[in-house]
Length: 425
Image (cartoon, rainbow, N blue to C red; front, side, top):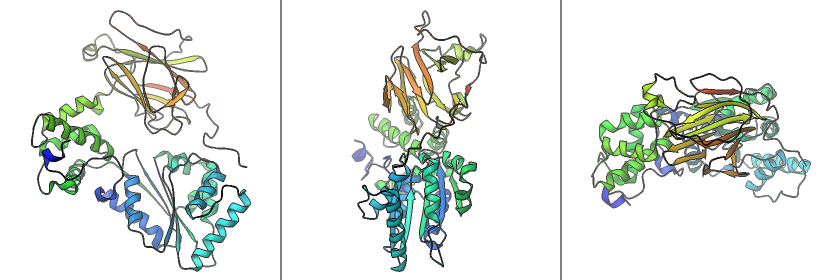
């Protein structure tokens, strides 16, 4: 590896949430202060949101490391569970064996435990990570738990952390009572260009670089441009850049190394993201990058649109900033991406709530074969190859009218069921 070459003692850009590497940016410091306020105040109920890779989990791990011993913590990370399973998980964290208890017994045991801890001068804190996956029924249980109190104060502090979809759930009419109990809500935004540069330097210092500048100053605008200031993406690009510099026997990372890493990762500039429909005949820039694949979007047998794939990254999700927008509640904000090269295309899950299914199996990443159908929520995405001379395609139902150019937007509001709900025992 490159550790010895760059005289480092540890890998600086690992993706694991190591508190030792937390960079105290103004945004992260404020979020951490809000978390700490749940212990200071008796009505602590805080919601922290942020995009995938924004540093929520690292922040939580750092906060937990610094807690006093008189704080009893239940940390829940698996959130696609029923209300019964949620209560059981909480009690299991508190040292009980609750898996044969029915709901009434679970609630009684939990209430008695909370009052007992309060009487003994201990504070009880519930932290739920990936809280955007909680069903409305489970969130209602959280509301009821937040109401457990003595004559003087509440006995359960709560931190909900999750992706921006969590805010959408909390703002729904069904959760107005829970929303009124939340004292603080904070969103972890992306790092600015200056903070992103300091973030890189900070992680390198922790890894043993000291005051040495292993990244040239002119690399930071490029790094920020391609990562958008998202810490996890910065880690990925910087780690690959160090590898690129190492293979060229460079003692520091320059622009050419970062560009080599970008090419290796097959990333595109945000403003040059893939156009998803055929381009006009006079669009010479698009003609220089001929499509090598195609996806057809359909639901219930009706084709909603076709998108051509050129080499690069093609993002699919619920919001308008995606290359392919599927406006449906079963689809996450940024649900999946298709990475295309001259040799073919790979589909990859972006930590979505409901996942992607190819050939009947849920997959994290898989190479698409001609004729493959990827299920995203209730929608089908049918893949085929495109060459300059022939198009290999799969028979499809008659398509509906769609715009000739621009992003594809498939607006379907037929998914009204709550995808996370399960029947209670």
